[in-house]
Length: 90
Image (cartoon, rainbow, N blue to C red; front, side, top):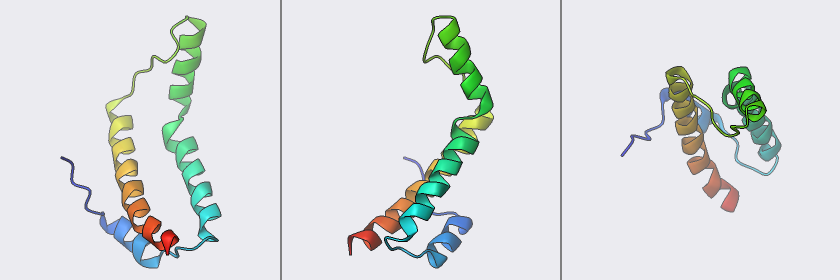
């Protein structure tokens, strides 16, 4: 099992976070930026396009650096989501 204890940076975000309906647009924008900058990287896009041209869609190689960064981002987002959901359900 992985440790999902919030990092100091995530704890600071949680402490200053406003959880209300108005914050949702800001969160969506932030998530879209994370996806553009860290998930759908230029290298990943190139691999997908190259694979389609070669008739091998869906096959990509993720570097160790990519996986480390992805895990870090995912853990932070899981912590923030766990905090935000109860605030939205009030």
